[in-house]
Image (cartoon, rainbow, N blue to C red; front, side):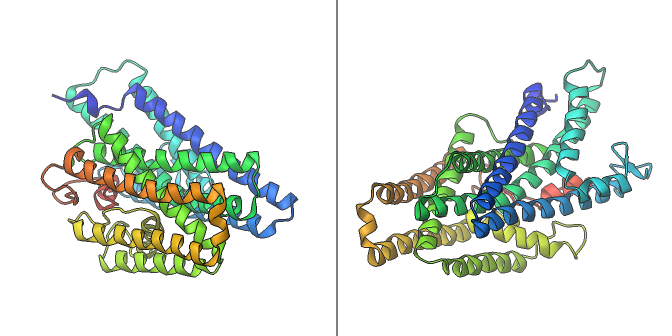
Length: 385
Protein backbone atom coordinates (compact mmCIF):
# COMPACT_ATOMS: atom_id res chain seq x y z
CA UNK A 1 0.00 0.00 0.00
CA UNK A 2 1.37 3.44 -0.93
CA UNK A 3 2.04 5.41 2.23
CA UNK A 4 0.76 8.95 2.52
CA UNK A 5 4.10 10.02 4.00
CA UNK A 6 5.63 9.35 0.60
CA UNK A 7 3.11 11.48 -1.24
CA UNK A 8 3.80 14.96 -2.51
CA UNK A 9 1.26 16.57 -0.18
CA UNK A 10 -0.43 19.98 -0.11
CA UNK A 11 1.91 20.95 2.72
CA UNK A 12 4.90 20.00 0.57
CA UNK A 13 3.51 22.17 -2.24
CA UNK A 14 3.08 25.14 0.13
CA UNK A 15 6.61 24.63 1.45
CA UNK A 16 7.86 24.82 -2.14
CA UNK A 17 6.16 28.20 -2.45
CA UNK A 18 7.85 29.27 0.81
CA UNK A 19 11.19 28.07 -0.55
CA UNK A 20 10.71 30.19 -3.67
CA UNK A 21 9.96 33.25 -1.54
CA UNK A 22 13.03 32.69 0.62
CA UNK A 23 15.24 32.20 -2.44
CA UNK A 24 14.05 35.45 -4.03
CA UNK A 25 14.33 37.53 -0.85
CA UNK A 26 17.83 36.23 -0.13
CA UNK A 27 19.04 37.35 -3.57
CA UNK A 28 17.22 40.69 -3.36
CA UNK A 29 18.78 41.55 0.01
CA UNK A 30 22.27 40.71 -1.27
CA UNK A 31 21.83 42.78 -4.43
CA UNK A 32 20.42 45.66 -2.36
CA UNK A 33 23.40 45.41 -0.04
CA UNK A 34 25.80 45.51 -2.99
CA UNK A 35 24.12 48.68 -4.26
CA UNK A 36 24.45 50.22 -0.80
CA UNK A 37 28.17 49.43 -0.71
CA UNK A 38 28.54 50.96 -4.16
CA UNK A 39 26.84 54.19 -3.06
CA UNK A 40 29.15 54.33 -0.02
CA UNK A 41 32.16 53.74 -2.30
CA UNK A 42 33.03 50.41 -0.70
CA UNK A 43 33.81 48.99 -4.11
CA UNK A 44 35.66 45.88 -2.90
CA UNK A 45 32.78 44.85 -0.64
CA UNK A 46 30.32 45.60 -3.44
CA UNK A 47 32.32 43.52 -5.90
CA UNK A 48 32.65 40.56 -3.52
CA UNK A 49 28.94 40.62 -2.67
CA UNK A 50 27.99 40.59 -6.36
CA UNK A 51 30.68 38.00 -7.16
CA UNK A 52 29.13 35.47 -4.77
CA UNK A 53 25.66 36.11 -6.23
CA UNK A 54 26.91 35.74 -9.81
CA UNK A 55 29.05 32.66 -9.11
CA UNK A 56 26.08 30.82 -7.62
CA UNK A 57 23.82 32.01 -10.45
CA UNK A 58 26.15 30.84 -13.22
CA UNK A 59 26.88 27.45 -11.66
CA UNK A 60 23.22 26.64 -10.93
CA UNK A 61 22.18 27.66 -14.47
CA UNK A 62 24.81 25.36 -15.98
CA UNK A 63 23.73 22.34 -13.94
CA UNK A 64 20.03 23.07 -14.40
CA UNK A 65 20.28 23.24 -18.19
CA UNK A 66 22.46 20.13 -18.43
CA UNK A 67 19.95 18.20 -16.29
CA UNK A 68 17.11 19.30 -18.58
CA UNK A 69 19.19 18.11 -21.53
CA UNK A 70 19.87 14.76 -19.82
CA UNK A 71 16.17 14.32 -19.05
CA UNK A 72 15.22 15.05 -22.66
CA UNK A 73 17.56 12.28 -23.83
CA UNK A 74 16.40 9.85 -21.12
CA UNK A 75 14.29 7.04 -22.54
CA UNK A 76 12.43 6.54 -19.24
CA UNK A 77 11.53 10.20 -18.76
CA UNK A 78 11.04 10.96 -22.45
CA UNK A 79 10.20 7.63 -24.12
CA UNK A 80 8.74 9.30 -27.21
CA UNK A 81 11.90 11.30 -27.81
CA UNK A 82 10.13 14.67 -27.80
CA UNK A 83 12.31 17.70 -28.47
CA UNK A 84 10.56 19.78 -25.82
CA UNK A 85 10.57 19.50 -22.03
CA UNK A 86 7.61 20.66 -19.99
CA UNK A 87 6.12 22.26 -23.10
CA UNK A 88 9.32 24.23 -23.80
CA UNK A 89 11.84 23.67 -26.57
CA UNK A 90 15.54 23.24 -25.86
CA UNK A 91 16.18 26.66 -27.39
CA UNK A 92 13.62 28.32 -25.10
CA UNK A 93 15.14 26.62 -22.07
CA UNK A 94 18.60 27.73 -23.15
CA UNK A 95 17.45 31.37 -23.39
CA UNK A 96 15.83 31.20 -19.95
CA UNK A 97 19.02 29.80 -18.43
CA UNK A 98 21.20 32.42 -20.15
CA UNK A 99 19.08 35.07 -18.43
CA UNK A 100 19.42 33.31 -15.06
CA UNK A 101 15.87 31.95 -14.89
CA UNK A 102 16.69 28.24 -14.72
CA UNK A 103 15.73 27.75 -11.06
CA UNK A 104 12.56 29.80 -11.54
CA UNK A 105 11.68 27.58 -14.51
CA UNK A 106 12.05 24.51 -12.29
CA UNK A 107 9.94 26.13 -9.58
CA UNK A 108 7.27 26.84 -12.21
CA UNK A 109 7.21 23.26 -13.55
CA UNK A 110 7.16 21.73 -10.06
CA UNK A 111 4.46 24.04 -8.71
CA UNK A 112 2.34 23.63 -11.85
CA UNK A 113 2.50 19.84 -11.87
CA UNK A 114 2.21 19.66 -8.09
CA UNK A 115 -0.88 21.88 -8.07
CA UNK A 116 -2.55 19.66 -10.66
CA UNK A 117 -1.87 16.53 -8.59
CA UNK A 118 -2.53 17.69 -5.02
CA UNK A 119 -5.15 20.41 -5.37
CA UNK A 120 -7.41 18.78 -7.99
CA UNK A 121 -9.28 15.48 -8.06
CA UNK A 122 -7.58 12.71 -10.04
CA UNK A 123 -8.71 9.15 -10.65
CA UNK A 124 -5.47 7.21 -10.54
CA UNK A 125 -4.67 3.65 -9.62
CA UNK A 126 -2.32 3.05 -6.70
CA UNK A 127 0.57 2.36 -9.07
CA UNK A 128 -0.12 5.55 -11.06
CA UNK A 129 -0.23 7.57 -7.82
CA UNK A 130 3.09 6.09 -6.80
CA UNK A 131 4.71 6.99 -10.12
CA UNK A 132 3.30 10.52 -10.22
CA UNK A 133 4.36 11.39 -6.69
CA UNK A 134 7.78 9.82 -7.16
CA UNK A 135 8.18 11.96 -10.27
CA UNK A 136 7.28 15.05 -8.25
CA UNK A 137 9.86 14.21 -5.62
CA UNK A 138 12.50 13.68 -8.32
CA UNK A 139 11.70 17.15 -9.65
CA UNK A 140 11.86 18.54 -6.11
CA UNK A 141 15.21 16.79 -5.53
CA UNK A 142 16.76 18.37 -8.63
CA UNK A 143 15.55 21.75 -7.41
CA UNK A 144 16.81 21.12 -3.87
CA UNK A 145 20.25 20.17 -5.22
CA UNK A 146 20.45 23.47 -7.08
CA UNK A 147 19.37 25.38 -3.97
CA UNK A 148 22.02 23.52 -1.95
CA UNK A 149 24.67 24.60 -4.48
CA UNK A 150 23.37 28.17 -4.31
CA UNK A 151 23.34 28.19 -0.51
CA UNK A 152 27.02 27.26 -0.22
CA UNK A 153 28.26 29.22 -3.23
CA UNK A 154 26.40 32.40 -2.30
CA UNK A 155 24.74 32.43 1.15
CA UNK A 156 27.58 30.87 3.17
CA UNK A 157 30.43 33.05 1.78
CA UNK A 158 28.08 36.03 1.88
CA UNK A 159 27.48 35.37 5.56
CA UNK A 160 31.24 35.19 6.15
CA UNK A 161 31.83 38.48 4.33
CA UNK A 162 29.08 40.35 6.18
CA UNK A 163 30.22 39.06 9.58
CA UNK A 164 33.76 40.15 8.77
CA UNK A 165 32.47 43.65 7.94
CA UNK A 166 30.20 43.79 10.98
CA UNK A 167 32.81 42.60 13.48
CA UNK A 168 35.90 44.17 11.98
CA UNK A 169 34.69 47.48 10.63
CA UNK A 170 31.58 48.40 12.65
CA UNK A 171 29.67 48.84 9.39
CA UNK A 172 26.27 47.67 10.53
CA UNK A 173 23.05 48.60 8.69
CA UNK A 174 19.49 47.35 8.44
CA UNK A 175 20.07 45.91 4.95
CA UNK A 176 23.19 44.15 6.19
CA UNK A 177 21.34 42.54 9.07
CA UNK A 178 18.61 41.47 6.64
CA UNK A 179 21.23 39.88 4.37
CA UNK A 180 22.78 37.97 7.28
CA UNK A 181 19.36 36.80 8.51
CA UNK A 182 18.13 35.55 5.16
CA UNK A 183 21.49 33.94 4.38
CA UNK A 184 21.10 31.91 7.60
CA UNK A 185 17.52 31.00 6.73
CA UNK A 186 18.49 30.03 3.19
CA UNK A 187 21.29 27.72 4.38
CA UNK A 188 18.99 26.09 6.95
CA UNK A 189 16.21 25.62 4.42
CA UNK A 190 18.54 24.23 1.75
CA UNK A 191 20.01 21.66 4.16
CA UNK A 192 16.69 20.28 5.41
CA UNK A 193 14.92 20.48 2.04
CA UNK A 194 17.76 18.68 0.26
CA UNK A 195 17.89 15.93 2.85
CA UNK A 196 14.16 15.28 2.91
CA UNK A 197 13.67 15.48 -0.87
CA UNK A 198 16.65 13.25 -1.64
CA UNK A 199 15.62 10.55 0.78
CA UNK A 200 12.03 10.57 -0.54
CA UNK A 201 13.16 10.34 -4.17
CA UNK A 202 15.37 7.29 -3.56
CA UNK A 203 13.32 4.17 -2.74
CA UNK A 204 16.32 2.29 -1.28
CA UNK A 205 16.94 4.95 1.40
CA UNK A 206 14.81 5.20 4.52
CA UNK A 207 12.71 8.35 4.89
CA UNK A 208 13.92 10.99 7.33
CA UNK A 209 11.28 11.47 10.06
CA UNK A 210 10.10 14.98 10.80
CA UNK A 211 10.08 16.44 14.30
CA UNK A 212 12.98 15.66 16.64
CA UNK A 213 15.32 13.94 14.10
CA UNK A 214 15.01 16.84 11.67
CA UNK A 215 15.49 19.39 14.46
CA UNK A 216 18.61 17.66 15.83
CA UNK A 217 20.04 17.29 12.31
CA UNK A 218 19.44 20.97 11.59
CA UNK A 219 21.02 22.02 14.90
CA UNK A 220 24.07 19.86 14.17
CA UNK A 221 24.54 21.45 10.76
CA UNK A 222 23.79 25.05 11.71
CA UNK A 223 25.88 25.04 14.90
CA UNK A 224 28.96 23.55 13.23
CA UNK A 225 28.63 25.83 10.18
CA UNK A 226 28.03 28.96 12.28
CA UNK A 227 30.98 28.30 14.58
CA UNK A 228 33.26 27.69 11.58
CA UNK A 229 32.14 30.87 9.80
CA UNK A 230 32.68 32.88 13.00
CA UNK A 231 36.21 31.44 13.33
CA UNK A 232 36.89 32.28 9.68
CA UNK A 233 35.65 35.84 10.28
CA UNK A 234 38.04 36.29 13.24
CA UNK A 235 40.95 35.08 11.11
CA UNK A 236 39.94 37.52 8.36
CA UNK A 237 39.86 40.38 10.87
CA UNK A 238 43.39 39.50 11.93
CA UNK A 239 44.60 39.36 8.33
CA UNK A 240 42.92 39.30 4.93
CA UNK A 241 45.70 36.91 3.88
CA UNK A 242 43.67 34.27 5.73
CA UNK A 243 41.84 33.89 2.43
CA UNK A 244 44.89 31.92 1.27
CA UNK A 245 44.23 29.37 4.02
CA UNK A 246 40.56 29.16 2.99
CA UNK A 247 41.63 28.55 -0.60
CA UNK A 248 43.95 25.75 0.54
CA UNK A 249 41.07 24.14 2.46
CA UNK A 250 38.89 24.30 -0.66
CA UNK A 251 41.66 22.80 -2.80
CA UNK A 252 42.16 19.94 -0.33
CA UNK A 253 38.42 19.23 -0.27
CA UNK A 254 38.26 19.34 -4.07
CA UNK A 255 41.28 17.04 -4.42
CA UNK A 256 39.74 14.58 -1.95
CA UNK A 257 36.48 14.62 -3.93
CA UNK A 258 38.45 14.02 -7.13
CA UNK A 259 40.31 11.13 -5.48
CA UNK A 260 36.96 9.51 -4.66
CA UNK A 261 36.18 9.50 -8.39
CA UNK A 262 32.63 10.81 -8.16
CA UNK A 263 30.27 9.99 -11.03
CA UNK A 264 27.51 12.53 -10.54
CA UNK A 265 27.46 14.13 -13.99
CA UNK A 266 26.45 12.42 -17.21
CA UNK A 267 29.48 13.90 -18.97
CA UNK A 268 33.09 13.88 -17.85
CA UNK A 269 33.54 17.51 -18.90
CA UNK A 270 31.15 18.71 -16.21
CA UNK A 271 32.41 16.44 -13.41
CA UNK A 272 35.37 18.73 -12.47
CA UNK A 273 32.94 21.62 -11.93
CA UNK A 274 30.78 19.41 -9.71
CA UNK A 275 33.84 18.35 -7.69
CA UNK A 276 34.88 22.00 -7.28
CA UNK A 277 31.38 22.86 -6.01
CA UNK A 278 31.50 19.93 -3.59
CA UNK A 279 34.87 21.28 -2.44
CA UNK A 280 33.18 24.57 -1.53
CA UNK A 281 30.42 22.75 0.36
CA UNK A 282 32.95 20.65 2.26
CA UNK A 283 34.77 23.81 3.27
CA UNK A 284 31.72 24.70 5.37
CA UNK A 285 30.12 21.37 6.32
CA UNK A 286 30.56 17.62 5.99
CA UNK A 287 28.67 15.48 3.49
CA UNK A 288 29.09 11.86 2.49
CA UNK A 289 30.47 12.45 -1.00
CA UNK A 290 30.13 8.92 -2.38
CA UNK A 291 27.86 6.97 -0.08
CA UNK A 292 30.65 5.11 1.70
CA UNK A 293 31.14 4.61 5.42
CA UNK A 294 32.79 7.86 6.44
CA UNK A 295 33.33 7.59 10.20
CA UNK A 296 37.08 8.14 9.93
CA UNK A 297 36.70 10.97 7.39
CA UNK A 298 34.11 12.67 9.59
CA UNK A 299 36.36 12.46 12.67
CA UNK A 300 39.30 13.95 10.74
CA UNK A 301 37.03 16.65 9.29
CA UNK A 302 35.70 17.87 12.64
CA UNK A 303 39.11 17.57 14.29
CA UNK A 304 40.30 20.01 11.61
CA UNK A 305 37.40 22.27 12.59
CA UNK A 306 38.60 22.11 16.19
CA UNK A 307 42.09 23.19 15.10
CA UNK A 308 40.63 26.13 13.16
CA UNK A 309 38.58 27.26 16.18
CA UNK A 310 41.59 26.90 18.47
CA UNK A 311 43.89 28.78 16.06
CA UNK A 312 41.41 31.64 15.60
CA UNK A 313 40.94 32.19 19.34
CA UNK A 314 44.62 31.68 20.19
CA UNK A 315 45.95 34.02 17.50
CA UNK A 316 43.34 36.64 18.39
CA UNK A 317 44.37 36.54 22.07
CA UNK A 318 48.08 36.82 21.18
CA UNK A 319 47.95 39.49 18.49
CA UNK A 320 45.01 41.59 19.65
CA UNK A 321 44.55 40.98 23.39
CA UNK A 322 42.75 44.33 23.77
CA UNK A 323 39.80 42.92 21.82
CA UNK A 324 38.97 40.49 24.63
CA UNK A 325 37.71 43.41 26.70
CA UNK A 326 35.02 43.95 24.06
CA UNK A 327 31.63 42.41 24.79
CA UNK A 328 31.21 41.65 21.08
CA UNK A 329 34.31 39.47 20.85
CA UNK A 330 33.55 37.75 24.14
CA UNK A 331 30.15 36.90 22.69
CA UNK A 332 31.68 35.69 19.44
CA UNK A 333 34.20 33.47 21.22
CA UNK A 334 31.42 32.02 23.38
CA UNK A 335 29.35 31.33 20.27
CA UNK A 336 32.28 29.60 18.60
CA UNK A 337 32.95 27.31 21.56
CA UNK A 338 29.31 26.77 22.48
CA UNK A 339 28.17 26.28 18.88
CA UNK A 340 30.94 23.80 18.16
CA UNK A 341 30.21 21.73 21.28
CA UNK A 342 26.44 21.79 20.76
CA UNK A 343 26.83 20.91 17.09
CA UNK A 344 29.04 17.90 17.82
CA UNK A 345 26.69 16.72 20.59
CA UNK A 346 23.78 16.92 18.14
CA UNK A 347 25.87 15.07 15.54
CA UNK A 348 26.52 12.18 17.95
CA UNK A 349 22.88 12.09 19.10
CA UNK A 350 21.60 12.11 15.54
CA UNK A 351 23.83 9.39 14.10
CA UNK A 352 23.62 7.14 17.16
CA UNK A 353 19.92 7.42 17.97
CA UNK A 354 17.93 9.22 15.26
CA UNK A 355 19.52 8.45 11.88
CA UNK A 356 17.03 6.59 9.62
CA UNK A 357 19.80 4.54 8.00
CA UNK A 358 19.72 1.87 10.70
CA UNK A 359 22.85 -0.25 11.07
CA UNK A 360 25.18 2.00 9.10
CA UNK A 361 24.97 5.33 10.93
CA UNK A 362 27.32 7.32 8.74
CA UNK A 363 27.52 5.85 5.27
CA UNK A 364 24.30 5.78 3.26
CA UNK A 365 23.94 3.00 0.71
CA UNK A 366 23.89 4.32 -2.84
CA UNK A 367 23.93 1.18 -4.96
CA UNK A 368 21.16 -1.20 -5.90
CA UNK A 369 18.93 0.53 -8.47
CA UNK A 370 18.59 -1.34 -11.72
CA UNK A 371 16.35 0.82 -13.91
CA UNK A 372 16.40 4.46 -13.07
CA UNK A 373 15.81 7.81 -14.67
CA UNK A 374 18.53 10.41 -15.08
CA UNK A 375 17.01 12.29 -12.13
CA UNK A 376 17.20 9.17 -9.95
CA UNK A 377 20.78 8.52 -11.09
CA UNK A 378 21.75 12.07 -10.10
CA UNK A 379 20.17 11.56 -6.70
CA UNK A 380 21.88 8.22 -6.19
CA UNK A 381 25.32 9.67 -7.05
CA UNK A 382 24.88 12.99 -5.28
CA UNK A 383 26.00 14.07 -1.82
CA UNK A 384 24.51 11.77 0.79
CA UNK A 385 23.29 13.54 3.99
